[in-house]
Image 1 (cartoon, helix red, strand yellow):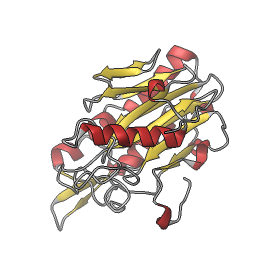
Image 2 (image 1 turned 90 degrees about the vertical axis):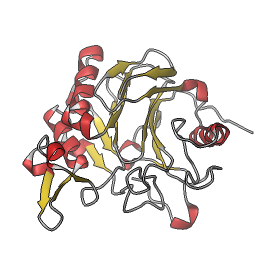
Image 3 (image 1 turned 30 degrees about the horizontal axis):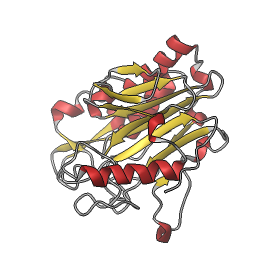
Image 4 (image 1 turned 60 degrees about the horizontal axis):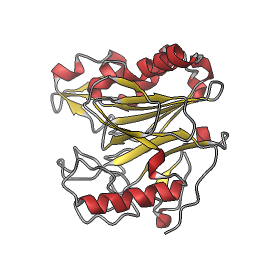
Length: 263
């Protein structure tokens, strides 16, 4: 992933994996560069929060302008922490989906996160992209591999051609869960800590293994080195901030002609 000096406090970071594709927009926002006051400071991009909607709109405008994307090119969904996938045919706001897939150029897919795992997938051969919101429920329902299967079934994607980015989320050492959640994960993706009597789950590792099992090459997968908890100065964490926090966006789309937006 692109690295920046701390003093620059970027609005977003872009996965290094996708840098070879000049027509591809792929990024995840940070918490910097917006106008929202605490506890949403400052680039809150989540309309589901109690932040002033005007602040969120201004933050969104700044984020899309920085990427050279028009808001009218964006597709999003109200997520329900499930595994429903929508094949998007045009930009817009949808309801009830945790993954979006499209082969439409100039349509940018987004997912909203603040601890859950964002996953961005690109098939450069068929020109298909996917944006996935993988909370723990979506992860145990294999939403990432289901997204790859949707790309294959709808658009003829060969999973071996895909490139995938597993984004910034809650890290394993911070994701403490009870036995009822832990029992739904493989032994290799969890550990029991007898000192606290709880399990800790690795969402990044679980989703990476699912992508590989779906046919994505391991050397075509980049995993974020950041954590919403350990790097809370740069990212929002719902758990660490007791639900009173903002949201990040992860976005991906094929843009054939960037729009230079001006104020």
